[in-house]
Structure formats: structure tokens, C-alpha cells
Image (cartoon, rainbow, N blue to C red):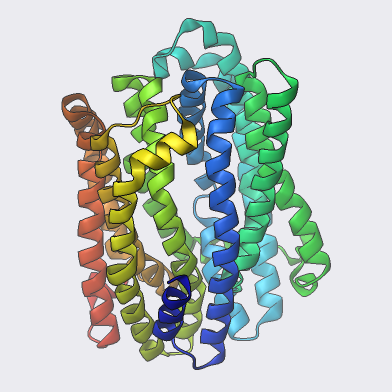
Length: 455
């Protein structure tokens, strides 16, 4: 059965040119690596709950979701680099690509220093217990934990440049490998801590989960700049301040899109914590991590299309993009969606085997998250190609429009119907986005995209 599914995917992707061949290698490599990542991620959840407890784990999830905002403090420079690097490499402009990389590191480094300077007093001023509505017993610890998190995310901000270089070079599998190595080290350290300490603390958990991934990225960056990317290695003499504007041309739009998405999607843990309590945050994230494995599998095929679409669009090969989009739609419709339905049916058994009785997940939570993941995956099918092409103005307006109403609307819906109510607005946004971007791609393929459809 598995061989049949893989053969069908291979047939849908087709053989063909060098770009398709590279795409296949990335997908195959990513399948293996993502499988490892899913196993590590799922194993880490019950282990982490054992290390602390369900309530502390819920607090950690809420804090880390807040800190996700900081990974986009680079105002879109890293994502802009992804497209500009891919374009320069497609044209054979090695020196220009190196200038883009050096400029991105310098500009993001300055932003990271600003972030650290602002975070030091902020961590002591903000009343984190009131913000999250958790017990006062965590007051002193939360202030220290937030300082650790701010430092880790500032480091990640700079070091994530390498991930965008790899993706821009159509080497998504290599980028995934770095991430999997970091996750495996985290799992090993937590496993050791569980067996050597009576009870863990949020501080230790923060140090392990927040700092190991950027350290892994640092080691990978050094190795890659001394080997494969020696000719692109950043240098102070290659910094071009004038290129910041060029990176922000497309990167600025990605930044606004990302900030809008954060207002909509990353505040969900905060809303759940405030309205339903940190234990419900844990319930939500258990179900989300389970069903998100379907989206993670989909990302194996979708993520490499960003850089591949940039390369194809730069070379004027719209037919290639159109053909691959049709293949992706068939994979999502005939394989992924039935798979999510099967996951819903099996969810009670999986939860029991995975986390035992430590956390209870209701049917309503499982079904609502399954639907949410399904529409998310459908939307991503079009988003990755649109992002690669760089025509993101329509996407920007959609997210900006919903960002202004997301928090109050989701809070009211969560208060009224719990987790299923909370997910109504995000799911609706992804449906609107999918319909709009599919229409936009049809216009682009037919060469009649004008105005907002072509920006």
C-alpha cells in the first residue's frame, strides 16, 4: 500500500527537467527527515510533561507561542533574501548573491541587538502572571524565563538566515536535516533530565528547548560556509546598505503578512490560556500536534515549491508551475484529506497510547482541529507557489483585513464555544485565502493578471 502511494506521488510529480529532478530529491529526502521529525516531536510531548507537569507545559507553550513573534522581528529581511538569493543564483550572479547574504546578516544582526536591549528591562516590567492568568507562584521564575527566551530568539533571528539560503537554493531537505538534528539533541537532553532530576523547572526547560536549536544552526552555518557556500560566505566588505531596500521590497510584504498572521494564529494559545486556563492550552496543543503531522507531511511536497517557483518564474516557465500545481491539488484531494479523516477516527487510540491519562482530549477538540488543519493545508498549496512568484499583495490585504478583528472575535467565540469556536475564524480565513490565490494563479498562468492580481 505504501509503495503504491509513493508511486502515485512520483507519477503525479512527473519526471522531466533538472528542476523537477531536484524537486524530487528534496521531497524524498524531506519525507525521511520529516518522518524522523514527527517521531521526535511526538515523543518529546509526553517526556516534557513528565519532566514538568501539564500546567507548566501549558505555560511553556503559551510563552513560546508569544516568542514566535520575535522570529519575525527581522521585518521580512530573511524571507526577502530567500527570493533574492534564488533569483541571483538563477542568473549566475555569484557576487550579487554574496552581497545579499552579507547585507542580510548585518541588518538582522543590528535588529537582534536592539531586541536584546529592549527585552532586558521589559522582562521585569511586564506582569506575566496577569497577562497569562496563571498562579502568582510563577512570578519570579517567568521573568527569568522570558529573558532566556528573548536571548535565544534574538540568536535564532540571525542564524535563521542560513535556513533561508538553503531553501532559496532549493535544498529544503538540508534545512530540514539541521532542524531534525536540533530536535534529536533536545529529546536526548530532556530524556536525561527526566531520569536524573526529581522534577523539572520552567527555567531548565526554556534553556534546553530554546537554546539548542540556534546552537545547532550556528554549527551548521559554519560548516556550510566553509564548504558548499564558501563563495557566498558573508564578509563586512560585501555589505551593501543600499540592498536593504531591495530585500525589503518583497521581504517587507512578507513581514506585514507574517505579522498579520501572528495576530490571527499565534494569539490562540494566549486566548485559550486567558479564557479556558493553561490545562486547556495543553489539550489544544496535544490535538494540534497530532493532526498537524498531516500538514507536516504536506509540507514535504509544498515547501520546495517556493524556491522552485521562483526559479521557474524568473526563467519565464509558467507551464511548469501550472503543471505542478495540478499535481499538488490531486495529491491533497485524493490522499491527504482522506488521511486526516482516518486520523480523526483513530485519535482516541492514538492519544491513549501516546500520552496515557495525563491529558484528556475531547471529540469536539479533535474534530475542529482536524478541519482547521485540512483547510490550512489546502491554502498552503497555493500560498507557497504565490510566495515563490512574489505576487503577494492580494494575500497581504486578506491577512491585514482579518488581523484587525481577529483577537476580539476569537476571544468571544472561544468564550462561547471553547476551542471549536476559537478555530472558526482562522479556518474561514484560510478558505478565503485559498479561493483568492487559486483565482490569482489562474490569471497569472493565462497572462491576464492586472492590478492587485499582479503585485
